[in-house]
Length: 387
Image (tube, rainbow, N blue to C red; front, side):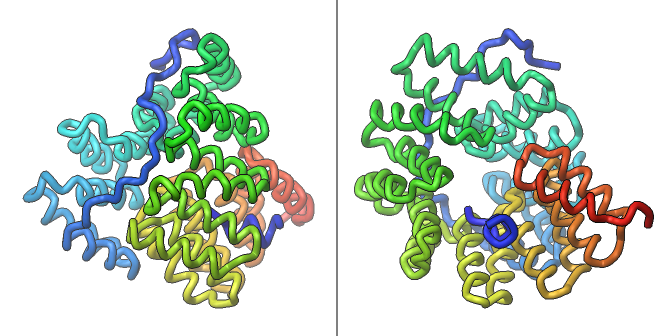
């Protein structure tokens, strides 16, 4: 997913010796979700209008009577989490997992919930159960970093690959761990190895292509993604990533067409909505972009890019109170996100709220996002010593 900020501002549970978590392998995420119920669609419409209380109230009536509607129950948990009401969010998601123990999306949410409460061992367990969701790898890396054993965790993954170099699941696991740390160049040979072992697996091809985009090797990325689309023309991740590659190549019409195809496959695809919003921003249509970002937030409240880009647009148009509200909502679901801390600091700084800005710059500096750290350090140094 592209971010306006990235392009415009920056051009007790697990022993250290424990085996690495087992997982089923690569997931291409190409299966279209079932159509959402009318209750979920209505709740999303309320969320898009900013009426979270009404969305919660309607779902609280609907969910107890429709236990089979996991999407509705998950969304209600999402809304509780954003309030935040962690107790009710945990109860809702645990209820889903009691009857659907392999629901990776809900395990990922539980991982985020426990991370927000500093329940690191429990968070690690939940993120492991969410694999191979990409957010699960990112959460897993973040929690091992907080635990202080990330190097050991990563070394253990490499050791398993060295012992079984043709085990595609272990190779892919190690590559994903490297990618989640931003070590894209180190990860690429391992993604390529998996794509060689599984040449017709869209998950392997998409992973390799996505990482090539991070490396700026767009022609190679499109080659890999097109191989996937030749196998599965409706593969949502491949469509979104291909669109991103064309955005990087400044071919907006081709990118937009791919995003529309992606949304035809997955109407509430938050990644495609954020990227369409970026295209609108790039074309100067900021109000249309904000609509896309709000839709993305309603579709998946746990992705930070929509909060970053929506708040950025509000700042650009001096709607500082709206920007503050967006960044604070984002931080309620991603409290360790350095970009959100940085953008909130910028928002406070623009309004002359220097003590608040200073605190947020310091939190951004404590993150593991090099561009953010550098920008926050530079701007913190320019703040008045007092005030």
